[in-house]
Length: 118
Image (cartoon, rainbow, N blue to C red; front, side):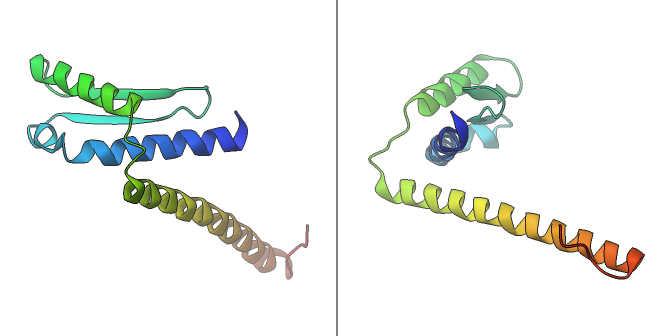
């Protein structure tokens, strides 16, 4: 649980999605869609498949579930890419917060003449 558990689940989901791209490319070209990720409010993950009902949809969902349940952790290059992307996205969150604070200070400056320091 907590931030470390959330980051580990996010890394797991990113690795699984990256590894599903090539094997499921034909399915997405045929109009099927899939996704998986970490659950923010619950301790778990989700997986989905959508498109026209039929045997192809069930095969897609099976492939998504299998790939998500057991991604290949031995692919060091994929792991490094996913870890680096996650680190950059978390760093961008910090930049976004700084920008939000700067925007608040600019508005306060315009309204009151100077920004607050709290």
